[in-house]
Amino acid sequence: MALRTYTAEIDGLNQWIVAAPNQSAALEAFGVHQNLFAQGLAGLTKDADLVEAANALPGVPLKRPKTGGKFTAGPADSDWSGALAEASKGAGPRKAPSRARLDKARAALDAAQAEGERRLADLEKAVEAAKARLSDEQARVERTLDKAQAAVDAAEAAWRKAGA
Image (cartoon, rainbow, N blue to C red; front, side, top):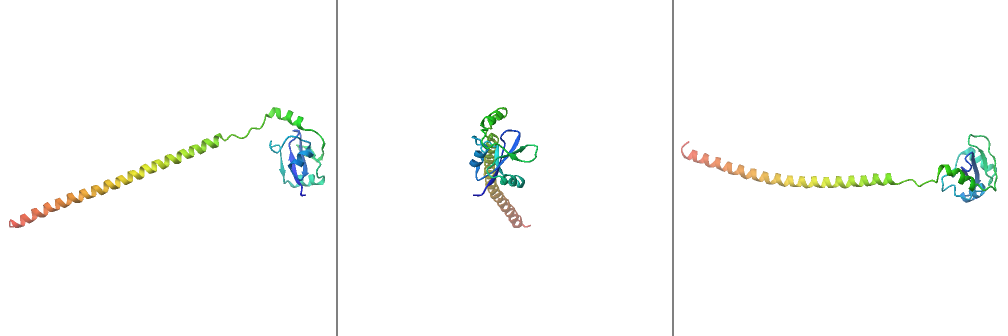
């Protein structure tokens, strides 16, 4: 079975790694009864130096100070749950990120889209109404011009008939 290298934040002082086939095996090797992965305190690493160090002693938890240095074998049978609970008291429980900002932004987008569509529909109605008024006005102007032209034609015919 292929091993993966997991890193964990267990005691707040050291960087912990272990080569294990899965997350459950990594937690068991660390001697932890809490799901550090779900809490964001552990994860998979691809860092070549960490992978090499962990694969040198598969299944054995290794630690080094957070400031760096060499990895050494850590206790495989320790119960870190108490230390984790104590360390997390200051930080408090991890809360799920709030969706409020995202939900508010989506609601604003939906409202802007609805308002934009309403305004465009209103403008389209106004354009159609303006086109209808334009067509009516063109017909009225043409009738007026036709009457005026007929009056000019009648006056010119009367003028010519009178001997002009």
